[in-house]
Length: 136
Image (cartoon, rainbow, N blue to C red; front, side, top):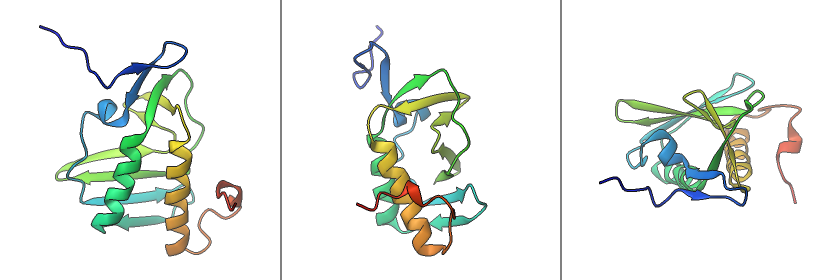
């Protein structure tokens, strides 16, 4: 018997919408470290369990659909360390050679969160990219 995955849905155009955990085939329950590499070469490691869970929660809430075009450059990527496995999360939403787009503003919120945290720890991070932060 073959069962369909209930978490998959279609958007208004009939395209398949999936969660990130479906794309990477992990529930990300045991991530104990996140290494961040920013586009300007700066790096940061996150080991605080609450911060890791905040990030994982935001990542898990992303609803994605596959797109045909590749993302242009990246602001950062996250290496999610789960035991001996590493899952690379790029803000361009590229996994295993496929590129996805977020169907809501979840990726913008995550980008803002990661960049703000980085700027608190690394003065001058991503200089010239102030417009990424929504200061309203």
